[in-house]
Length: 383
Image 1: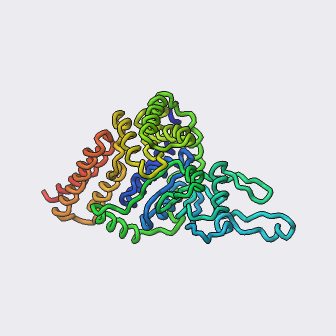
Image 2 (image 1 turned 90 degrees about the vertical axis):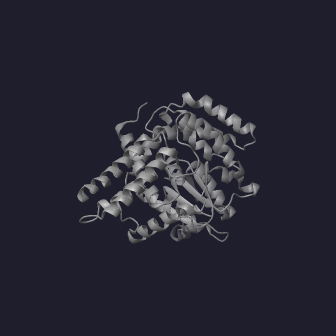
Image 3 (image 1 turned 60 degrees about the horizontal axis):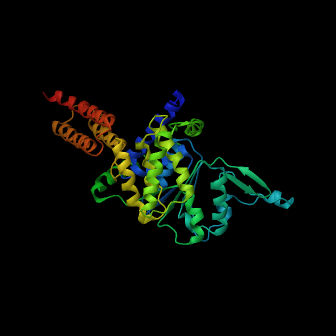
């Protein structure tokens, strides 16, 4: 199966979303990639890390760019179910029926972000477990279908409580989100200030793609041919299990859908070993994460795929090159020669990084070279 024109437009729209988010959020390339993969596969993601790592803002902007109805909430031990699922409908209650009003609450959302997700009460987490599993909400005596696509949960750590394991296991994808590395602090400050100056109110920017197109793309994941990698996937999972990695049967089976979605996002209807990269985020025990990543990385890079080591993505590097170039290209009048030379040097450094860490992504190399060449043309003004 080759992706249809409509599917290709949606995939390229998601690529635009990735570039936008990569340009705005420093050091969050892996998180962005997982957000995109999750909504295509209709799976759920758990982000593990300290507060203040821009998780809420990242997901808010992501939801806006894909025209998704969003619900966000910080859970505590004192959060009431009505704060999440909706208040009691008093008129119906007085008439003898129990129902809650779900408008603008979690049951009506397509993309959900729950901070400190494991802090919720048993009543909240049990309801969420059913909703995540079945995408249905039991509202009084009636069961309502929900439009839920993905739940993104955040927590400072994984729970030790065995009673939370079933709920935790529903988050198929996991990512450790750390504070920005010191080497990227200057970039963080620069882009953070630019973002504050250009802040747009919620709903103030048009979506990059339509939700109906995204749902159609998700439906086509089942059409991807994963037969060429099923044996490799089985060997990979077997190796991980033999090394003591904990993986439930649920996670092993659902991994196939992640691989299919990765192939589709690569604009291919047939999966290849390079599409196994989501398996690196399938771990259950946090201490297993490095071993899982390294084991998956061997299969992915052997097929010419991108290395899974932390770093800036090709999309991020292209976005940075564009930003550096536009700083001089968009200026009025003659730009000082020293400013032009500094911009060329900055873009060249990004090109070197792309060639070093992403040698197979020739499209990124080409786009960065094009931005460098456009800036270089300004030197003609000084000749």
